[in-house]
Length: 527
Image (cartoon, rainbow, N blue to C red):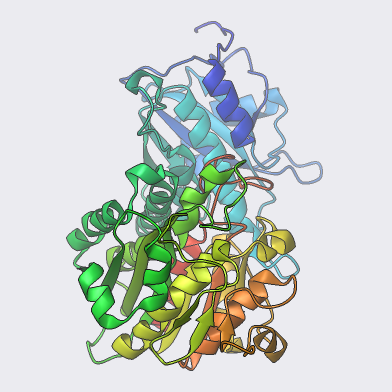
């Protein structure tokens, strides 16, 4: 039996463990050999352990019991000897237990039979599975395992989500020898393969949104974003039409051009169509705010943290990722999207505070604050989407205003909608994905605060401090679709900060709320 040896962590690995909030206890000497790297020829496996209840010993998950039988009860023996309790996210890694798997990570999954918590509006069992799978997969990743097998823990879809999200990295701009390798994640066992595959599709779509959002703005211009969208969607059978400056001017999308003209980068508008049902069925149409960089324009944003504004296009990234998943899952629904892409930069051509533009429907829009360019740039594309797509439901997504971040932080994404039935779909979707949403008021009170002044019909800023509610009111004033939802991901769709889920990385882009939008589309398809 190999002797136990001390773990030697690199500085980058230690930092990653801190960001990950993974807790692993000290090794059990008899079967524990923590290495800095797994053998290339060997794989790792993650199995779950339920929380100890009363005097009973903590129980392994059904997949864990099968693995325990495979190794003649060594895992259950080691669990007893090491005093593991099954506390959520706490685990140990054992070596020299099985010839096929060089390392076995046993992770606490929390209480057995955990279900839906109405007060928290979340399925606790599903979320615990994501956390446990993420903790084990990431720990094995940091030890160099090339393939990580994960126990389904009774929720294989959620286990796939947690593991695939946890091991993914945006590594493109680092030296190759400094990058964390991304292992392949596989289901341990044969039960729940279809659910596992769905989970992988959803996680990989969110990872796509993370990559698009985290890419530096000089590497993710409107033109490059358009090409990335084509590369992601066209192989899935989704049509993507790229509209350039001449077309945008001919259509009279003046509010979009007004923001775009401050930058040397040419604007692009993408029209995306996924047809999963009868072509005659009206689609769900999504708009994604695509500011590939938002400097604030002439109302320049604060220099500290301005680099984060590369994620001002995370709304557009979420839409692209969600449609990719809809196509991969073959959802029986029609989904279309309109994505205006540009930069908001200061220059002699930039929009100025006090400028007024006439929209496609004849309404005049005053720009009081150029830092809130997202509201202004989306006005005409929203009108165009309604006239061109004739949607059954209209949803716009973007990082619009700071109010929702102050109110909800990273706990939930804000939703404004004129239909309670629509809100219930978003609420249900968020409770299942663990990426929750919260309804905010879309009252006439706010429409009055953005309404007619002495010189124009609408204002992109409005009156008062409720910035997110005022932004929603502006776009809702232009929405003629019966079912309308405005989603502001300012607190959730950018850098992960306070309250980062263990399957995401603090200080990196989150890709939220991609999985919730995918789940919403799934529910609408089945409705």
